[in-house]
Length: 67
Length: 219
Image 1: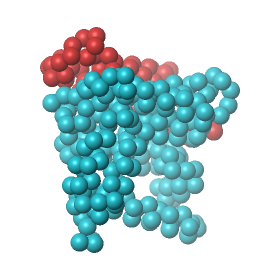
Image 2: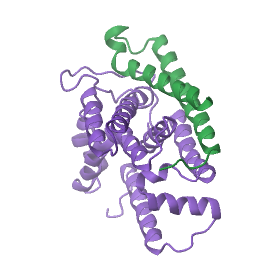
Image 3: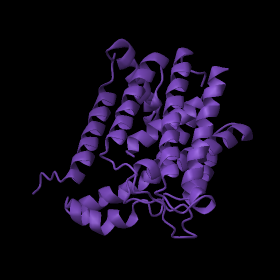
Image 4: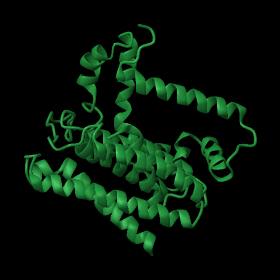
């Protein structure tokens, strides 16, 4: 359950980041130096890395997956 | 953002997404790294210009870096290549291809945040030359990028020690087994050729890092 939640957070933050990279200038604003974009982008990186770290800890507890 | 950071982050995205086969995780990890394949041109240029990094930078790196590989077309190409390389039924291959595209696209976002203000991405290339970059973007030497790089390297070793497999599998199953054996047991039973390969890789990595910094033993 916890792994599914963390996976969802990873995917959601990745999707948010991809939106900022590919769609933001055309859908929201073409100004890359807006405080909103800077704050959201950096926060998304932090959330992504924290979620990946937590997911890694959860996966490590279960040992090597079947390959 | 540093290349190793992209590779490790992409690998952990693959692992967190439930990919249980090393081959699948490897495909997604290298897809996530792939926009930085253009670094090959920089290395070749440094050799071509006799280790004159300034000439290599002005004539090659400054022109091509990010220009052809940091865009949506490359993301789609990464998905096609991942589909072709993946094995198994259609559903699993589709999952690998989708995650490869996600990792590749994520690379572009991470470079928007941590690639530096002078290295834009070109989201709509080759259809459009539109550049997307921000003055607040971290340069390669800024502390957030260094922290992320160190965290990725430490995380690789820590995860390997506890989980029994690691991002080192991007370089092959044998390399990963050797790494895990060292991490978990502190020694290696027998690995003459593997040890030689590791030292050769370390030497190449040292040259690759020092050459752009101006170190030139031939001057």
